[in-house]
Image (cartoon, rainbow, N blue to C red):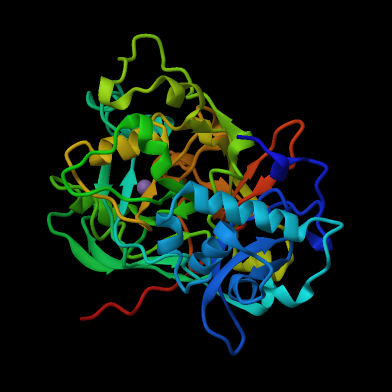
Length: 434
Ligand code: MN
């Protein structure tokens, strides 16, 4: 479904969009902004500006399906727009592309400077599920505990996940506070309550659910991609010490739910069409997915080839104007299950999804050392400190550290697009109660 909106030669009259690393005219991701002194409304990123969809709705420039789509996308949350499906989304994309293209009349009245607007979560997230589909991460973490048998026997049969916490999802830029919790140190026989000492990030992609399904009615694998409205970056902050003590037998809880940071722009399946790719081939001896998880089209084109990066800055680095240190560079192809397989599995028992539900893919790591998606892996379980350009070292995060996640699609013959930053600074823990 490559069309004129993807043409690499297409330029915009919004000058900052041309050659923009994230938001050229070929991207057009959706989000929610609040211009100074005004209410929240939907917006589309273009270069260093945003298109105010409430102004566009009221401008009389659109008609038909594009106008109906714009009315939905102009709302203070995008749930209705996400739920409306691909036809609506495409109509607005095509109209925006024409409106913003070089040669079209300049309409600066529709724009704000992105930096002058507050940004909000793009949708009300009713439910959040975090998968564990980054197979190299799962193997690396498993190896720390079970050197001979890193992956559990179910891993290659089931897209493993847990139900996360929707209330603590925050948009990029909001600080995250070091959590307090119950920690069992080694060599003692009772746990203590205090600040997390092993605070980590997890580099993940987020998947926005569009159209939902009725309770009791599974989404078939062949239709599952139609239920995905877009993608973002997701940092699943993880308190490794709290997690290690609490997770058995029911899984992650307070070690994960204190905060999750996502990038604010929803990058659509349409924008990502040039970066679709086949599912990475399964290793020899891996089982075929069960029929309810298998679709030939999905296998051939249901994955995404995106470059993923994690970067770190410290207080000292920022004070000395030292650029962010790249912790990893990897690929979204290192995900064992496609987004469609996640949707099909999540609903296979009749569980219902709603517009604006969010999935995390699980931490995405490469097979190689330069693409590990968490400090747990980079520091080999906290044993091998990482050295920064200032001479500082890290196994886990210090107060004042900032983690920045980035994603880009790059392919010969197409304009590169990006997701915008997913970033947050770590602030000190509250003082422990007595
Ligand atoms: Mn995770």
